[in-house]
Structures are given as structure tokens and as C-alpha cells.
Amino acid sequence: MKSFIMKDEEFICTNCGKHVSKLNYTARDHCPYCLTSIHIDINPGDRLNNCKGLLIPIGVEKFKDSYKIIYKCSKCGINHKNIMARDDNINKIIELSVVDK
Image 1 (cartoon, rainbow, N blue to C red):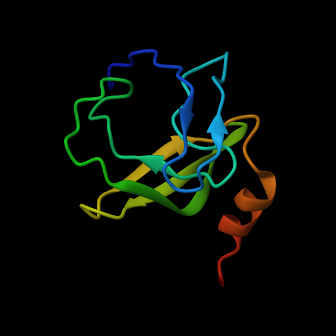
Image 2 (cartoon, one colour):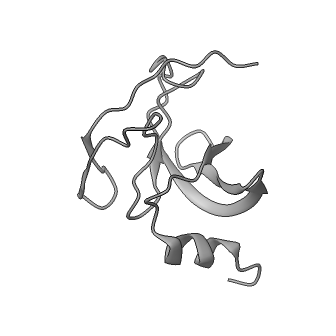
């Protein structure tokens, strides 16, 4: 199991420029507006990855009673997954769930 370091921080989204507040129930790891993230962790919250590429949302998959957002890094090409947050833009989640885009 991956180690988890709790990092629930506010930030300005590198992709859309919006201010993103803390999540206040778990670690915030992506923008709730455009769903973009940054490839900064090796293990959740450690901030040790030197890549720093944009993680672009490319799909979603069912996970327990929620969903995981599937990402592709714009710099190194790796695929990554993050659990959907309660305040994520549901219209963006629906767009990602459509197979024929």
C-alpha cells in the first residue's frame, strides 16, 4: 500500500487559474473546476516527483461508491488516478465518462 501524507492545501490552478480551497475532509489533489492536477507526488502527499507536468483528465472509472479520475501526464506520459472529490464539476466528470468523445 502507498504511504499517504495528508496535504490539504489551497492553490491557484495552473491550468484554469481559479483559486482552489482546501477540501477539509481529505487531501486536495486536483482542481474541482477543470479537474487538472500536477504530477508532484511519488506517493500521495510527498511532493517528491520532479516531473511537475500537468495531469490532464482523460477518463473516469467506478471506484467503490465514487469514481476515480484517470489522468495522463502532459510531460512524462504516465497514467495516474485520483479519487473524485465531492465538489468536483459533475459536468466535467460526465464528459469524461462518455466513451465516444
